[in-house]
Image 1: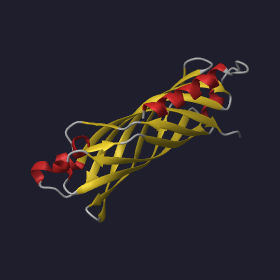
Image 2: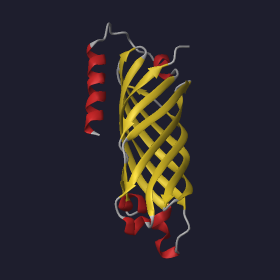
Image 3: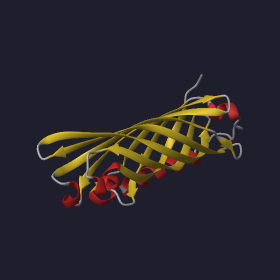
Length: 201
């Protein structure tokens, strides 16, 4: 995991050092379309079956942002895998994959000609695919996600992004009422470092 972070950091530094000119940025430049790729490490917290029972691996987050006036529409896809670390919590589950698809709105705030702060609020679908013995099982749910990002423009066509997404998951799993909240709710933070590529229009 540390090796991946170093590679991305070196790439970002190299791009920053190799700028050809300091072109001023306007609101229109920022709110046009962007394709986003980011390295992220999910961190589950609180008293729930994911934080207690699984080790969720680092992954890539793919996104698309499209400006509409001063607002942006934001779409994300994230697929992460995990290993079981406490079988007494997960039962006979051997591993699990978490697939998230979301959409939302944000309002970018220009700090300077190169820096921008981008908060957004998203809602999405969560699928948990688990290998239960030799059988594949699936649980579904939805989530609310608050995201903050700090973007730095390297060229007109690419930004560096650093930020985090805070997920609140609501999962449909049958469980006894006394432990239902342990299986039906989860919270996590996905810190990320990545690049945004501007789509010319």
